[in-house]
Amino acid sequence: MGRDFDMPQEATVEATPEEVWEAISTGPGIDSWFMGRTQVAEGIVRTAFGQVELPPSAVTAAEPLRRFAHSSGKADDGRFVAYEFMIEGRDRGSTLVRMVTSGFLPGDDWQDEFEAMSRGLEMYFATLVEYLGHFAGRVATPLTEFGPPVTDWAVAWERLYAALGGVPAVGDRAAVCGVKGVVYHRDSQTLGIRAGDGMYRFMQGFGGSMIASHLLFEDGADQGPRWRAWLEELHAG
Image 1 (cartoon, rainbow, N blue to C red):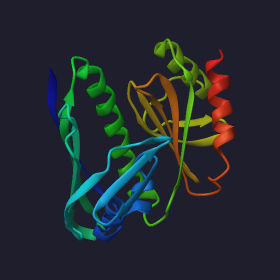
Image 2 (image 1 turned 90 degrees about the vertical axis):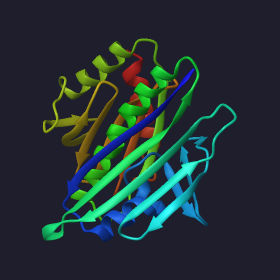
Image 3 (image 1 turned 60 degrees about the vertical axis):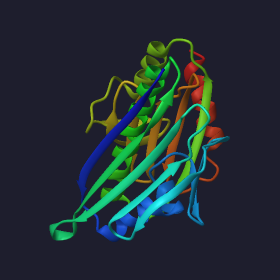
Image 4 (image 1 turned 180 degrees about the horizontal axis):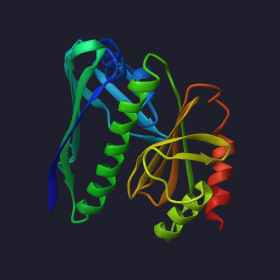
């Protein structure tokens, strides 16, 4: 068993085609909205999420200011993931950006993985839109910290929302661990908060841990221990 999937997403952003191209086709640009750290070199996209190295993804299309695409090779079980970005300039410096993620998930438990992947992709695309609207041209330092194992996700999210002062809606102001910002994305497995110095994201990790996957535009290099300790305290009850 398994499933082919195809997930299109699009938005009009207040950024130029040049700014969008930089964000989707270069390592520093991708670092500023996607997951972990990414390098784009010699036709290969390589991404590391914490200590996990994702399969290398070969560039299949690179048409500056128009289209960028890359795809992992098929594994023995048929698994692969492909990304395609299309750019279309609009009036007054705005740009339509479309991201299509497709591939194949093997195994009888593909539903759970697809659910986690879908929620993650929704957050990443929302982060791309937020980045282009508020931080275009700047480069973030990605921060990825994994909390302790979670046995009850309902309780885990209750504790996170309690730390925020209640369940937030998109557009609400929120404060967490000394960071004050605005909620730009929330769904059943992810939360994103935009502050003046970066974007702070929390994810329900498919491996069983709450993940802090932040993008910091100021003083990001030494914040890992702080967020690791905060996650441990949060889930210690």
